Length: 267
Image (cartoon, rainbow, N blue to C red; front, side):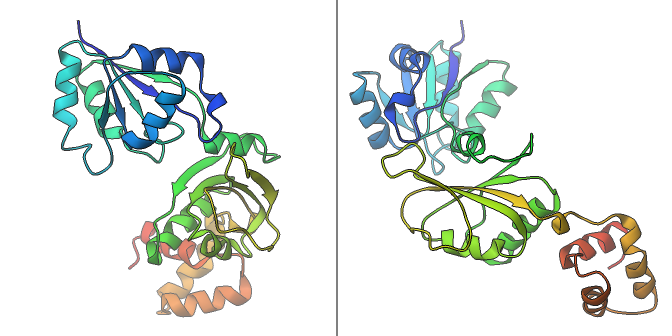
């Protein structure tokens, strides 16, 4: 009989947040695949779990994939954990999970802590839905492009960010949001959850950010773009058209105009 791959969520800070089921499975499997064995060993030692560990991180997950698939085929049960939270959610593991599913073997989720869900639950958002953006690209125009796509959805979204880039991220949100809720060090000793209003933010710890776009960040209806197409057909450049829209329709974002011209088949 083939083994089972368990995808096990672990605490994001407070160790009491681990589930009884997670402790049982981590004790019973043949091997635990850990993003960082040193971090996972601290967790296992705390709960007196003696299961063997094997490193499995973003730099090794493709290289070691065949080895772990073979173990499952031989009937071994494996558990996958990240340093904190749920594996494969802004953490390694997706390649192994995909391969196991493609081979029609069993993958079992063992749910638990998630920074995104935790923050949304205490954000006070009026929305029933949100998007998960994870970590944005660290620098450059791609960072802005991904952020613009999230804003264009018009629904709240959750981002993760490192302390060294949190100030930059908050500056990129200025003028584009209805509300921003910051979660710093969730479930840990120095946990903070607050509505961001241009105040100084401690650049320490781990951050989850709930962003509610302002209404003007929603992509306009195609009716709004009729003028843009007329101006384009008259020979105006995208820059000139953007200048016109800054006067007649300041809520329309430049990237929205670019997307419209691409869909319309215009260069």
